[in-house]
Length: 101
Image 1 (cartoon, rainbow, N blue to C red):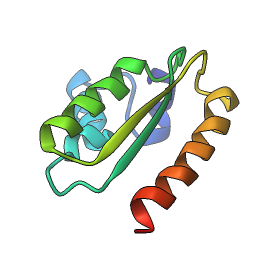
Image 2: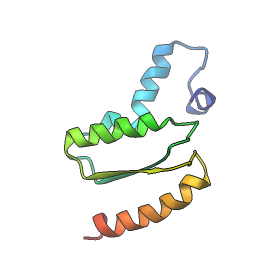
Image 3: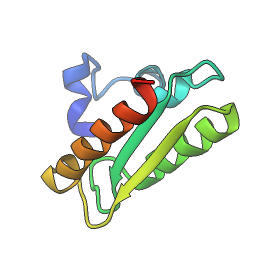
Image 4: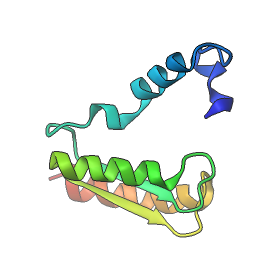
């Protein structure tokens, strides 16, 4: 995340509390509640930018809130086309099943 901090308008040399506050504000897990929309999470198990544990934490938060969702883990996928390509197909299927009812 460190490489993205300046792009978010945060001084990387500023207080850690500013960085943590921005991360909370930007993270979807912050907003999970029982009225959260149906959600598909597609994540590669070899993602070196966003750890799989982040997707698993969101999955658990959605379970706790009772939100209709699915976590699809792409074996060998990173933050790349290896995850994106099957993710698009899963998103199309998810959209048809959940959102076009």
